Length: 436
Image 1 (spheres, rainbow, N blue to C red):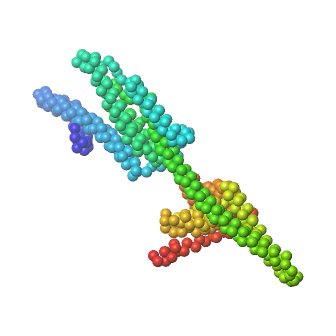
Image 2: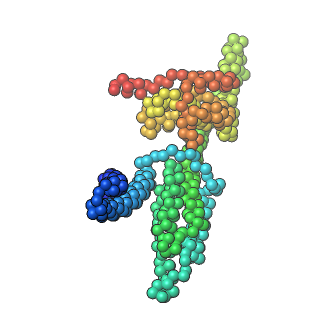
Image 3: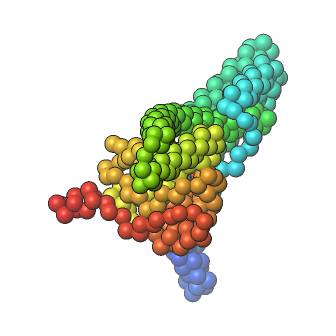
């Protein structure tokens, strides 16, 4: 039956209704035949009965036709539903859906453990296939009276259903991402149901334990990829820290060299001045000489303090600067980055962040030196957590928070020297805006 027949439904319905009315009319007329003579009655009854039989025949044919149309509608509705489902599966990247947070099923420390577990799951699948536990199947078929031919037919059906299911699972698992894992899971389950339904006539179906192994593979593959990405991020951060540490050591070496030269210079000056004091000089000259010596001693003390501070910075990895910066040209108003650097010259670190990866330079709102800079940074991150922009990757230190709220919070750290700038200069951005 063509789908065009569906549109004849109303026509058939009207025809049936007309026939029923005519039949009722004929039956009603039959009760008024006592007014006719016997011959007329006999002839009229015969005509009416023929008409009734014809009407019943047409009615029966149209009922059959109507049932066929109804079945066709159901069939095409199912086809349409399947097509829509397939479209959703094919266009994962185009149709973004809202999903809850994925709850990890495994707690492995490294991606290598995930990889080993994936290998283990796949080996279990191979064992099930080898032992013929991957499917449920009937082993009593015969073909042309031959049991061996029947077994061959069953084996071919097993191969076919497993090949189809495994190919579908592999293609689906390779596409799994955070935003589509639920859909991929449903796709695998649907494939399982459809293949089992198609193969009902062969009495071959994929077993539920095998389906569960495939779903485990899906979850493992997803978490494996996530773990690898996490490790890449950690490695990138580690390299960044190493780069920072090397830059710090260079700065310390340069600073130590400068301090040592200054100390050597001041000590030489002090020695020369003390030698002059041993020579016969007037009291006025002696007083002036003592003042110079005291000035040099003060400078030596300053340099010794710098040296001690530098030694402390070198030995204590927690000392550094917490910086609060913004880039309204790149990220908009009230978007702040709260980070930490151990560098002696924190402006060098800010300059590196203002590299070619952003269109404008970062502006500094605050540079806060602390001997426990990482704890201070962590406190600020926790306090402004609800303002985080990236709520998944906490290594991204950007917050959309009113600048006044940050200024108010920093006032609680009265023991620290904090110069806060509320309004960023954003010179390049503002000049660019004026030229637009």
